[in-house]
Length: 338
Image 1 (tube, one colour):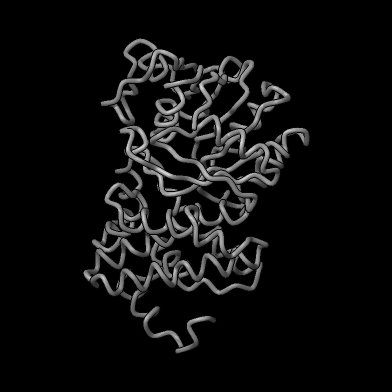
Image 2 (cartoon, rainbow, N blue to C red):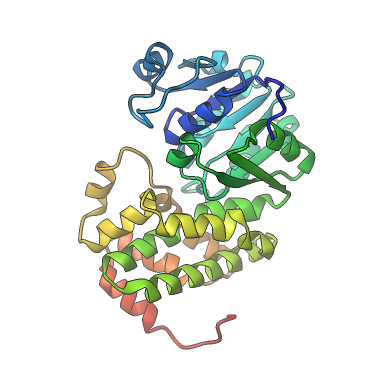
């Protein structure tokens, strides 16, 4: 539970997840939230609302918005990164000179960097000083921003190689409505959070094609198998994928109406172009960029990812959603444990 001791917290990113964490943390802590847009920051400070994301909720007076990274990070003990995965490298490179030496960093980002195929842990380590590396932690689990903002019961996992720091984050963020668990499997927690978005696109395609609940359950279950195979090949603990950052987040993102990635799959099944889908979204659907990175990681580690490969070909326009589904069903028969 929250300790009752106020912690200076910085949140980088004023999208829906950054905003919901500002609400969560602002109930007890002193919070600065960094936004790219000066008008948005001004609205948060003046109107106590974010006009673009979760616009109906009141932001506590303990939350102050700024477009200045140095100001946002000054004397902050806990720094939460909540920007899309493709912006993490740029934002954290610019943040590096302003981070306090003793800051604990928390990533809520569920994606893989395009081009490099790096997990966010690898990106952070690539751009931040070595002194910060032991303090990197990664939050994942079934947590729609809308429900966190509304105070709905939510449980997540915080992973850090030094679990002492995960426990510190757990104490700062946990509340009666937001329960945090800890673990040390950074790779498993990161992969579970990123790859479930790819499977959610596949489930959206399945649902959009009208294939029924049997097919949905099959895609989710075989998708979990893909995630686990790749995770084990990359050094993750297979039991992580049976927890909140694995099955918990997977089930939520594949079935919840608030899931952006599931909506992408539904739109693809309706025949909409990817360009039109993306242009019509106010936030990033991480699964779009993660799909190709996941397939590349599979090739590097010699792991077959047929569902991710199908999603990739549909996204690229190489096959139709219907053809992708037929290919999956026509694959060579094999043992379930392969």
